[in-house]
Amino acid sequence: QSKLSGRNTYSFFTKEMNAIMLRRFEIEEQLNLALQRNEFEVFYQPKFDVQNRNVIGAEALIRWRNPALGNVPPDEFIPIAEHTGLIVPIGKYVIEQALEFLREWACIHNKNYTIAVNLSPRQFRDKELINFILSALRKEEVAPENLEFEITEGVLMVGNAYVDEALEELHQLGVKLSMDDFGTGYSSLSYLRRYSFDILKIDRSFIDGITVNKEDFDLVKATIAMAHSLDLQVVAEGVETHEQLMLLDKLGCDLVQGYYFSKPIPAQALIDYRFPAS
Ligand code: C2E
Ligand code: MG
Ligand code: MG
Ligand code: MG
Image (cartoon, rainbow, N blue to C red; front, top):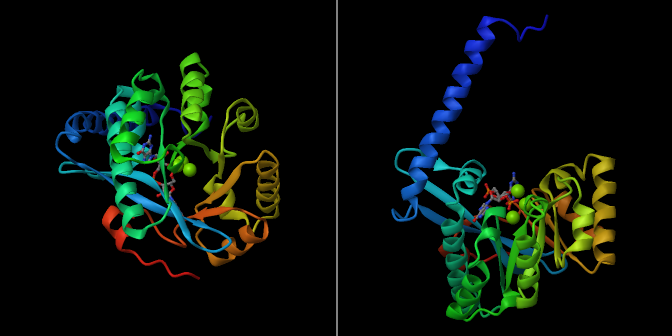
């Protein structure tokens, strides 16, 4: 018999489950008012050109600070917002903030930066999504090609007509589409063939291992070659060391993002930051 059977296990799991359910319930409850209470802030993590080490843009990453719960990480509350549908208004808020930020940042630095925003599956079911994006672009006078949407396989696996349609409309609009967390899902390759992606982001878990693990190195090398043969730009996410950067440079990776350069930081901090041209 395994150690996990018997009465104690039952009460252990019940307690654990209760705690998880309670936390989830609290998050759901607090999330309902978070937008109107202004508890969200969008942070930005810069992306760099591997060749010349210039900043080329940034990824928008939401932060939530709640009086009762403290800082709740997006990995915890985004799936809940996704489930309740609140991700739709929250996602619109991120798009608005990100475009407003981009306009200011690009103007102050006089650079042609791009901004990347993560899109969740549920947002594709919002019939207003495309029109909302269009009017947000017009309002901030941002060119569509300076806006990028990062999409994980989760979106594509939904596999329904409106996802296909929305992706095609986004592509027609001229915004960039990026496949996020590449390599972690099941059919990344077939999705690449089916949709019009412009950029491929290699998941952090592969970058972690490239300097120590031959398999990870070979996988990243092959992924970069494959992406380039499909005319996709390659971003490595989660670059934390100089050694990783050197290897990615050697492998011809186009863009990098990670703690080695900068963590996600508030808008003003990124505007003020002078990145060393190393
Ligand atoms: P993601 O889109 O894959 O974002 C990358 C995550 O890796 C971010 O976590 C970022 O802070 C973290 N990261 C970046 N560089 C490094 C590094 O060098 N080392 C390590 N250990 N981590 C690094 P974050 O901000 O906690 O976001 C987690 C996930 O939550 C995101 O993964 C994305 O899926 C989701 N998310 C965040 N903001 C939004 C949003 O506005 N909308 C939607 N739909 N999802 C979001
Ligand atoms: Mg992302
Ligand atoms: Mg990612
Ligand atoms: Mg991720």
